[in-house]
Image (cartoon, rainbow, N blue to C red; front, side, top):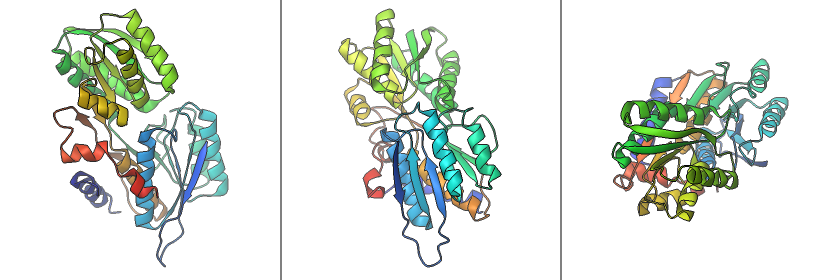
Length: 331
């Protein structure tokens, strides 16, 4: 059962609107279904985060009586696979596309191609370098980065040296988090020093671990780290553990998985900025359905962000973000 937070967000949204691996899920539609086909194309298909998006999209499909086609790259750096996936769905003539662009620029032509065929496009999770889409459903990533800076400053007592480990070039969502973090450090960490802010972890744990270890070797006196996504945070955690610095160097990450949540409980992670990927997947499909049916919808939908610490991780609304009902909706 989703928490009150989810249903409150959904109620507010509906009132305001009024208006690579592949899986196809057939909705339990009633006799009035219009057999709507929606392609949902994530950045990747392996991380916990995308499984939660998938579950939310599936829930929306079942409740709204539509069919979704979930397909995306295995790794979050395969732009060509994602471009080809969009083009394939355009050629198949689906009714709408919900897309989380791997790259803010390279997916623009594919989105234009879809809209030229009168296929509505909903962008979710990560922005497109163009406003030629129907709606954008996402976290305020700049705010998430700012909250992460605030939490890291608190954990470090307002002093010390900091590393910003970036994710991947071209990823709009994580770029906005990184920008928000740097702005937050100027606001909250005026007496602190950022010793590195130009290194990218990359999309795999293996590459991110190597980058993290290099940074810790280069800056042995660093006292705090911010990582802009799930894989980079997990890799930095592992690097700190291998260097016997876990818990000593304050670590704040973005998104969560079982490893990071357990480390938060233990005190080796000091904060996690959490999105609501379940709600994001749900609202991406709901908005696509509204666009197809000619109903009104919002141009931009903020799905929220929370800072999770040891102190609040047992709150009901936080537990719902940490432990989404993935299995229930992917059966």
